[in-house]
Amino acid sequence: MRKKFAKFTIIAVFAMLGGAVSNMILVASAPVLAEGLKKSSYLLLFDDYNKKGIEAYVYNGYPAQNFYAKDGKIRLQQGLYNAPGEDGLPMIAMSDNNGDLKMLLRLAGKNESPVIIMKDNQHRDRLVFGLDLNSPAQDPFMAAIDASGRKNLVFGNY
Image 1 (tube, rainbow, N blue to C red):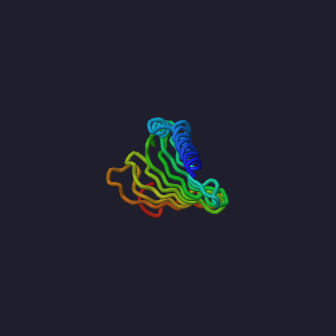
Image 2 (image 1 turned 45 degrees about the horizontal axis):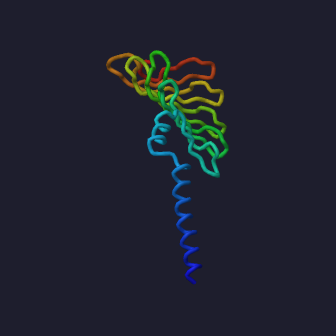
Image 3 (image 1 turned 120 degrees about the vertical axis):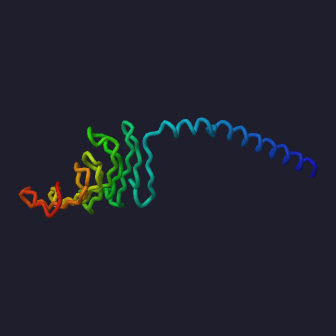
């Protein structure tokens, strides 16, 4: 009985030592993991039902997120513009079940005014409303754009 207990004890001790050593070898230390996270510019969240899920990334200093439906088509985007005159301004874009952009909420113009843009199935701006883009008074405006592209101002300046 003593021999069996001694063998069991020796096996248990070596098993614990082996586990401890393999844990030190295979698991990255906290500073290494933290460094990797600091340098990452892309994150993907998904599950078994949605392989694309949510993308979050930073490109040239500008963060953005894309949300995908289960069919892999984009439905929602949010991020910051990186174009001249719009540098760093936020936007939220919503797409239909085909992945086509239908509505855009953004800040625009000299005043960095809030604007909502609604688009038709041909990707044309059809209804635009918000606050005046350039006037210090920032009065509200609404413009309807017909199928030929002609702007019809309902009220305000756009």
